[in-house]
Image (cartoon, rainbow, N blue to C red; front, side, top):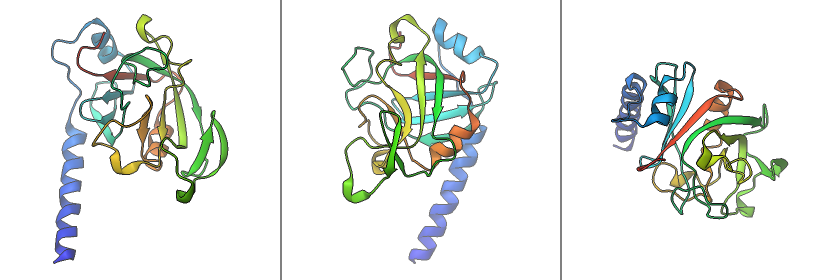
Length: 196
């Protein structure tokens, strides 16, 4: 019986993935910044805070891959020290961790060894780091706030609840795939209700 349930789950997951690949990012009544992002003629990243999902799209906004994430537990915002996830348009500034082990742990963007569950912290930064540079007036401080897209050890909460200190957390193995598809300059849009 357990084997049948696992097979059904695998089929459902495969079907879900196929549906997502056919989807496109659409924003009803987009503001000026959102229109600019959607018209950007390159692959891009769209972060949906409410759904706790990150979508990697082609230049026509067709979703190529979706990942479960976790954003700031304090919500969204741009105030320094708020531990909130900033909103709006960004670009990837730097890529850190090329070819490193998915469980490599970082402190201040510097590798400090392989993650050990017995030494778990609330906000482990693992695998890869994509630093974000804010492209709008309200989010220009993002780089100095050290808000990243990065791997985490808290994978059970991905896709279910915001629990980061402002960064966008991903599965440490899944971020290796996203990391290989993007380059510095790739645009990122973090969407939450009432974006500036």
